[in-house]
Structures are given as structure tokens and as C-alpha cells.
Length: 136
Image (cartoon, rainbow, N blue to C red; front, top):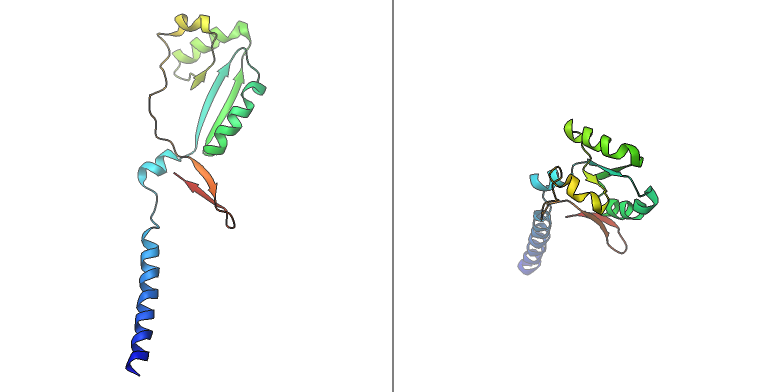
């Protein structure tokens, strides 16, 4: 009889322990992860390429980073230079610019390269039966 009650206590203890330890892995995302996954908008300006040239790239990027929206804007050749210089002067320049390689010297002192490293949140669907969106 003692063994019967003891086995009940052991099973109960193991079940409660399993629930407690299973919950330890569930924690709120860090402040850094929350900041990296906040919604953001990037503005991309181009003069030579249509959206079709960037559409697949933007769609693939959005799959990995659903919190990022990319606004695509194509300007006419005759307005691009003036619009870009005015936007830079007014601190509303686009985040990404597409310029002809021969123009690089003209804009080199006005543009900054992308940092070598950047922390960004990304998400992917994992699981076979139960699909879950997992962020990292």
C-alpha cells in the first residue's frame, strides 16, 4: 500500500516538474529582440530600374523580415539628381538609392555605406504538423 501511494506521489512530482521546466524555456523576447522587430519602413529610390527588377528581391526580403516595409520610388532621369540632393539637404533622403556606377564619385561624400553588421529580427515558419512562426 505504501508503494502504491509512493508511486502516485512520484508520478505527480514528475508531472509537476515537467510542467515547471517546460515553462522555463518560454520567456518574453529581450528588449533588443523587440526593438529589432519593430515595424520599420525603408525608402528605395531608383532612376533606371522599374519595380519589376526589384519585386522578387523585395518579396523575398519581406518573407524574412515581415516587420520591414519597402517603399519603391522610380524618378525620372531629369529629376533624380535634384530630388535626391534636396532630400539629403532636408534630412529626408531615402534609405537606399540606386545610382549609376559613373555617378559614384559625384555622391561619394554624401552617402554612407551600410554598416558591416546589423542586428535584425527575422522570422521563419517551422514545424510539419503544427506550423509556427519563429523569430530570431
